[in-house]
Image (cartoon, rainbow, N blue to C red; front, side, top):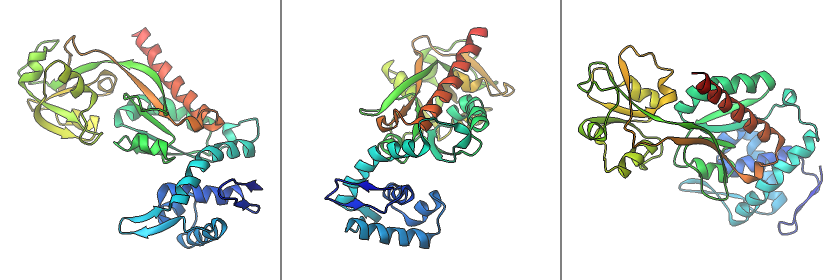
Length: 313
């Protein structure tokens, strides 16, 4: 493959897609061992590749600091250009006809255990049924997820929080809150009030660092600050902690549908807690990429199945 770059006149006359992929991954990971593992090379082979790339671009690209490898200013410019070029090159190599059955790529999805439970089986049954050679790396939703999309460390993020521009976001389905309590909890009403929620400690899910989760933000708009109780990183962990405690979990209803109601019970949330949209986010550079378009369509199909179930319920 011949690629003439406008990056300070560099001409990659002998570069192939694998070398460019190695450069892309190195700039994303900034770590030789992790980068090598992602493209199935030994660390020594990746080190030789970095040496070759440095000679090609006449730049150090990655320099050691007290925090590990950091990209040079030139490397940051190259990374921005690669983010636009690489999806187009992959599309050219695959040809106009996209065939999931021939895919051997790695796709990286970030999500919570809620999305994994609610969408996971429907989605991955289709993904691996159509593309048995694909590899899916699933990571947890985090405060860095949108930054990971921006810098190519993630391909798709499932989240109820719309991302900042220029990232794309598409709503998938509407979700509502319910209240989950121990079966022996003092509150016995079928629907809780805002006063009920203010009177007992909460089992809260924290996956966005110090930021409030959506349920806590909605409660705050009603003048309710959830009493300090339990803060866990997983929705399923919050449910598992409820039996025998005075805690209340304000959680998405579809997650609770997958939990046996033996030691917990479900009450309707206060009417003031409005429904919310759950969606998927991605970078616009992947808008027309055949692989990622196919993946997003499968996520959308799995979400439509949820809507069909709601209509039949």
